[in-house]
Length: 161
Length: 165
Image (cartoon, rainbow over all chains, first blue to last red; front, side):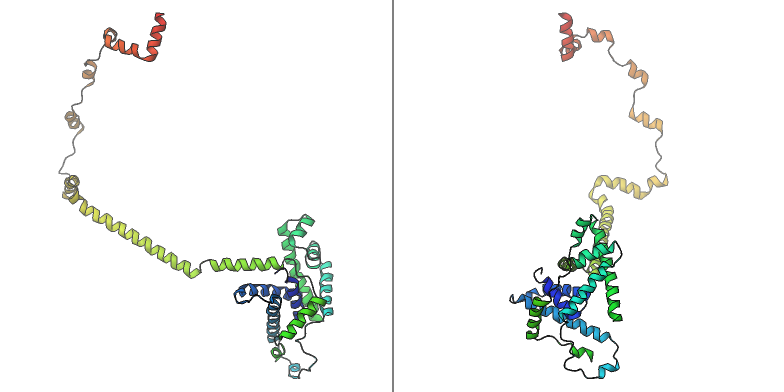
């Protein structure tokens, strides 16, 4: 799992364009893979994991599309170049991460430290706890609250764009 | 509809996506991703191991019925014992028949007075006890058997020897 964690997450990020959705789907991917280990033949595990991840991302996008209210634009035939099946460009993902970093750095204390450490620097809650001399439970709570704040801010920005 | 726009990737598209991601767009996953996954799997397995609520209720009902059955058997055994005990044990029979006849309850059998009980027991009076054959101090000292016994006892013999020497 640790070997493919970054790859699965990156694939999910490219397909969904949302950090937190990508995180959720990456988790679901590993849980689904664990549950169907019996049916796995043992070869090409990378492709197998990515297949689960991409299918889940597409299911998510379908579900999201179903929730949207149909508009008159839906009746206009899609052009061949405007296919949503294409994954997001690397630049878009990089932009996403850049925005995430910005939002983390602008968060109020004490959430800023936890958010930057966890989401930007990639430290675990335990590492942040040792480094800052704060209790692990407190750090975990701060990360949880920072995550909720980040979700709200980033999704609101997406909506306004 | 919108849904039709999202079709699953073909094998070629998938491999191309993996290759492109690995080469150009690798991002670091959240640090606790794996530990969260493990935690969720463990929680799910723990939940599956726990008996369902329906099973718990069913087990409690079975347990309650067993308890009722035991109590009923114990009551039945006690009632049976009440009726069979006089037949099996003759000692109980007479007392039991007296009880059934209501002799004690009706008052036909008079309770004995204190004096009657004392007369039957033939208890000696205080004077009789005092005047009975209790040896006096002089008699005891004269009695060689008793003095020899005292001398034979360990402590007394030591004292006795010490005073002699």
